[in-house]
Image 1 (spheres, rainbow, N blue to C red):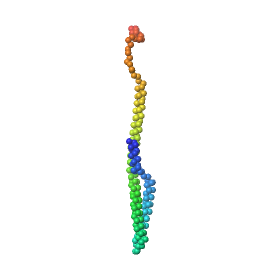
Image 2: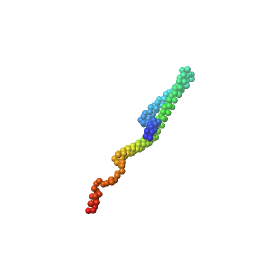
Image 3: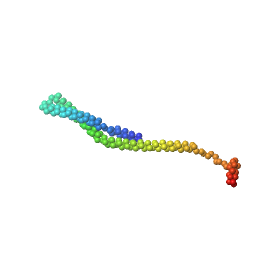
Length: 169
């Protein structure tokens, strides 16, 4: 269970990287600067297009320049849309950070609980093995009766006679 939870934590971390506020601020500043630069290029292209379109008579080079500027404007707008998407993604990641941290905290608590249970089970296992080993050692000291003792037909000692004599006295 511990290794399964650790695998799940790794998958969650890979799918939801924790973001650092400093790193996010730097990335956002870079993206904002790129958006401003692209927007300025779009405005410059639009201004040049407007000045070319205001001419009464267009030369062939002016027509080619208009086509190039329109294509450039389309590319720049696509770049700006992509950069804005990156910025929104960054904002979403920052917004999800507390939820990610909460989930990682829950995983940490579950992992700690499982490790505590594992420690408890390990201690009980060691205690049981020790008890079993001690019990086995105690069984080795016990004697087993192989044959039943037989009462002798004739007494060898004088214990009964002494008791009889002492009793009559």
